[in-house]
Image 1: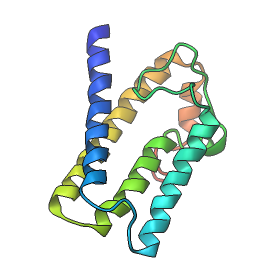
Image 2 (image 1 turned 180 degrees about the horizontal axis):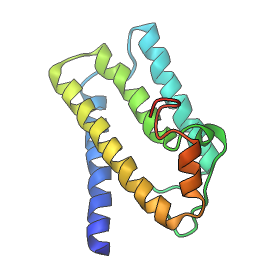
Image 3 (image 1 turned 120 degrees about the vertical axis):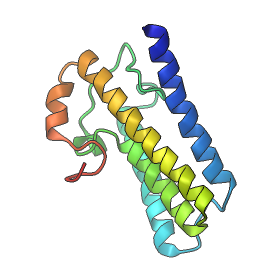
Length: 148
């Protein structure tokens, strides 16, 4: 069972990185449109804020909780349980819109589906392994405040 869990976790991350790489290498990294650039910068800012709040070394790139994991409910985690996933989506969507083609939108949709599946998988693990996570789930949104 542990082996399947590891493979599943690595697969989620591999798909995520392949999608991010394909988006990054098939178009410009900064949109020409000011609104799209602002959205991208907001996504990057959210990612930095979430990382600083969580503190480097206290999170795992795979959805598996670390042995020393503690529940963080401050910063962006006060409203959103997965701000780093939202940051990835906000950072990459403007890139896809800016240099739009069918391939890039399909890659972004694969990224979206992968992150949604990954966050559901991660939440199941966190709910069983992290004290207080069930209560936190009732008080916060998964990805988008007040919507989801």
